[in-house]
Image (cartoon, rainbow over all chains, first blue to last red; front, side):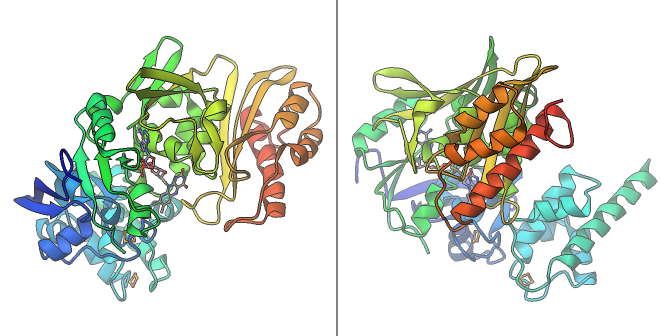
Length: 168
Length: 287
Ligand SMILES: Cc1cc2nc3c(=O)[nH]c(=O)nc-3n(C[C@H](O)[C@H](O)[C@H](O)COP(=O)(O)OP(=O)(O)OC[C@H]3O[C@@H](n4cnc5c(N)ncnc54)[C@H](O)[C@@H]3O)c2cc1C
Ligand code: FES
Ligand code: FES
């Protein structure tokens, strides 16, 4: 098709705080854009139809499915992947808790899981175990059985509340 | 999998979207939240050439109280419904339904207009529109057209939208004093499409429930009003009679989620629970 429609789209966005300009295929979803075009392989592609959560990352301050977002739609957006979240130190405590409690084995689900858990903790300082399970209901983990993940998130929530109280 | 090659255009406003659609022809598709459409394109269930991206049209992402009506723009996201004070106050069924839709990372992008236009038989929001007597506002080249929810959902993934018509908003009569709304569903896992679900609204009076609306989802090709059960409750009949009436009201088929017999059973369970929610009683028997 021609005229107003095109098979490639020019986008300018910020990825992990860095400006990026690219000409992308219109059909390119965000995960392939990050992995294949930018070499950021931290975000994983699993099912590619919204079910498994392996591609969960942060766009404009909210978690989204990278496989259900076209790169072409993100002109002007702010994208944070696990690489950026790690480097910034923003989720250091959560990552440490995952390691301490064996909340990952193969690690395939972990980048998406961390993005989902980080968002829960941003909005709910004192989530119940049910709240945690509900919030990660869209993030499949084939290895851990979830219990250790819930433990890790609950521990970080408690630790952050302790820190907040100490700071008062 | 990945989508087949496609061509894309970003619409800056409703008029632009309609012009792009005319340019591309009737087989082009509107891209709103993309949470159903892109999943289908990735699976190559659907192949479309032209995608018209309306997701940036800010004037369609609104929630406004207009007189006695709550007007919700088509690009209002499920997460917006969850967080809105106006929705919680004037259309609590939508606030209850939103967290039941998919998962948090899908609710941040999925839109009410997309959900209604897609018309999945197991979706929550179409049933909400039916239970709350909403009006769907569509816009084509000829201007706006208003369609009552009961005329809008015409079958499995079928609606009353005409070719080249954009769903731009819904209008919902605000909750009047003394009236209550409740939503329940039963799903295999949190976030899955429901095996069966129910959106209910009623006036809660000392004499019992009146003007009862029961809109089921996941038990037919489109959301269904359980008219015989509604009439039984309006007449002050015991809940057991309303339950029995559901056998005539509903005609579910087996699907991936549950058998027809299971759905019939769950519909009755949901009725008891929702009546309890409406009246604040344990048994669901109107006080
Ligand atoms: C894993 C998963 C689980 C899900 N679970 C549920 C669930 O439990 N309940 C539920 O209700 N939904 C569920 N969904 C679907 C989700 O709610 C979608 O957001 C919704 O169905 C479609 O909204 P959208 O904005 O993403 O629309 P899109 O995917 O962008 O569009 C859907 C269709 O509607 C058309 N369309 C969109 N907007 C308009 C408009 N304004 N005018 C005319 N046509 C339009 C499109 O052309 C397309 O054909 C799930 C999705 C996934 C991936
Ligand atoms: S790859 Fe996106 S949800 Fe599975
Ligand atoms: S650690 Fe292997 S899938 Fe979660």
